[in-house]
Amino acid sequence: MPAQHRIRLIAGLGNPDEKYAQTRHNAGFWFADAVAKQRGAVFHYQERFKGEVAHFIFEDEKIWLLKPLTYMNRSGLSLHAFVQFYKISIQQLLVVHDEIDLPNGSARIKRAGGHGGHNGLRSTFDHLGSDFLRLRLGIGHPGHKDDVTDYVLRKPGAQERREIDSTIDRASGTLDELLRGDAEAAMRQLHTQAPDGV
Image (cartoon, rainbow, N blue to C red):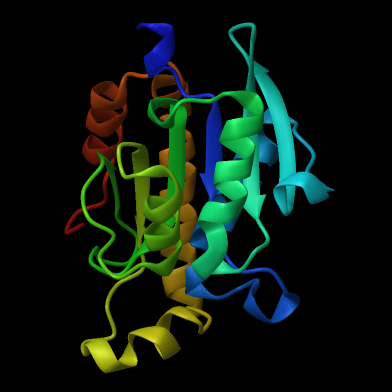
C-alpha cells in the first residue's frame, strides 16, 4: 500500500475530566487506551497539542496516538496542531468516535462523509476537512434528537458497556490492516466478526 495511504495518527475523541471518563461520548478515548495497552504505549500530556500523546512502532514506522483534551467541540484544534507539526496528511489520519446512528456494540469504518451533528467531527472538519478515515463505535440512539446530548454524556448500562468493550476489542483486532492503509480488508474483518443482529 502506498505510504500516503498508511495510517500515522490515530485520534480518539472524547472529553477530559473524570466526570466524563465513563460516558458514551468518550468511546474514542476508550479505543485509544485499548490500543495503547495492546501495543505497550504510554500516554503523556503535551501542551503543544493540548492533548495526551503516545506512540508505538509498527513495521518500522512510528504510529502516534492522540487524545485531545480540548473538550469535544474543540477537538480539531488539537488535531490540526498535531498534523501540522508532524507533517501528517489527512489521508494518514484515523479518527475514532462514538456514533449514535449505529446500534450499541456495532462498529463501521468509513472515509469522509458528514459529521451527523457530532461536535468532535464538526470541529475536525472545520480545521482539517473531512477526507480522513473514521472508526465509528456504535452507542445506540436515545430515540429522540432532543435527548441526544444528555444521552451521550451519561454512562452506558453494564451490558451496554460490555458490548462496546467487546466491539473495541474486535476493532483493535483490525488495526494492522488499518495501519497498512487497507481499510477494505479491515472492514471485511470487522463486519464478518460482528455479533448476530448488529
